[in-house]
Length: 165
Image (cartoon, rainbow, N blue to C red; front, side, top):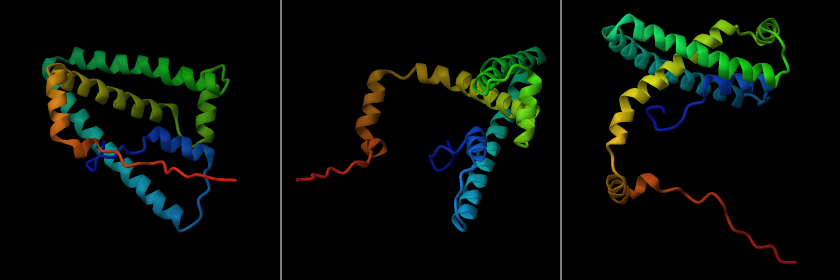
């Protein structure tokens, strides 16, 4: 989430949009491009601040803890991302995958770094926030919900129309 409470487009969403070659006319394209780049930059800065905090705390716990987190992130990348992309594009080898990525102007190592850092951020936040969330009871959630109805209000998105023939 950004400071404004909206979910920014992920790097993967942006890469997907670039891969589809969505055509937007000027000047909307330049405006949208600036918005996307700003949101992506905000997301990267937030993630890097969290990673920095994680590294500082994990270094105190010992180098092996940080190494295990990095190793786990790399294994998950191979298991989730690499295998899904290979399967989705009917690729048989790492060389075919690297060629596909090269044609799109990115490298496997760049994507691996971004993915693993995001994974490490998520796991770190889960470990820091999870214990706090587990302490919140259903009654506390309901009480908060009842005291803050404006936060849960969703404007109607559908308009009923009748057509008579």
